[in-house]
Length: 136
Image (tube, rainbow, N blue to C red; front, side, top):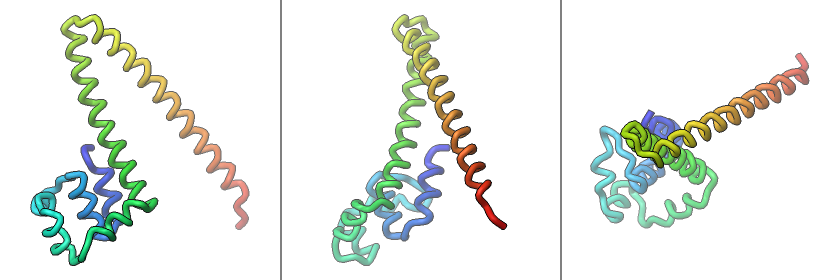
């Protein structure tokens, strides 16, 4: 799943903003290594812009914030997977603290899953209620 979500979200954004975002957060694709390595001046020339102000202003928008939050969520998920793998390996080796942390992680993840399931059920119920008001 690596960066699929962020790539899909970035498809909807102007190509210059997409390139800026990917460059800023070093999000790699098969075709953008040259953009990630550009200096600010090279990037501005490539994007046919005179200054970074247009991009800095864009950083203050809801569109940018939503992309940023999606990116950070994916980054945190990858970090959690890495931490989980480390804790799991240490627990398997008999590290007492790691075993306790491993069990706590499992408990927390189960609670999170229950919470997410309840939220999805509520959302589905709300949508069904909204459908009842539909007049044909």
